Amino acid sequence: MYQSLLLPTDGSEAAERGVREGLRLAKALGARVAFLYALEPLGPRLLLGPETLPYYQELLEDARQAGLSALDRATRLAEELGVPFEAHLLEGRAAEVILREAENHDLVVMASHGRTGLDALLLGSVTQEVVRRSPKPILVVPYRPSDSQAASR
Image 1 (cartoon, rainbow, N blue to C red):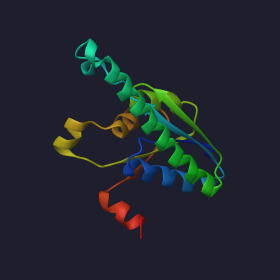
Image 2: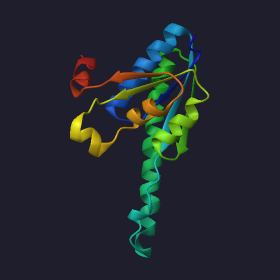
Image 3: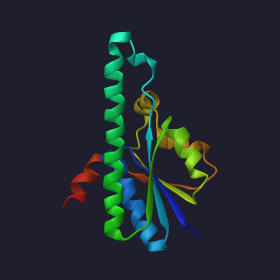
């Protein structure tokens, strides 16, 4: 059925819940997983003048390190469970990167905060956009902040 799962992460608690659930499913199915961190472009709005250029490079490196750290946490979980994996840090807008990479997998497993109303409108949702636009099946793992307290018990 599903032999290859794409597990995007941004390093948040919600994304890590999606990674954990995706790994459990992959283990049960005997599937392999690909972890994905999308390094979002910082954009020209951060470059107010030539004096900000050194800070831009620092911000970009900090974002890259955050991505590598998120992927490291995910790969350690996969190793603990014995699930075969690969990990990718790719540059681009998160939803676009996920949709492009989803073409190479049977199923995408993502978490969602489940925001509604004005929060969803103002904050947008990568998961929502991927669900709307993907021709591949998407398993959405709901996340509530109380989930992290229950998982630590």
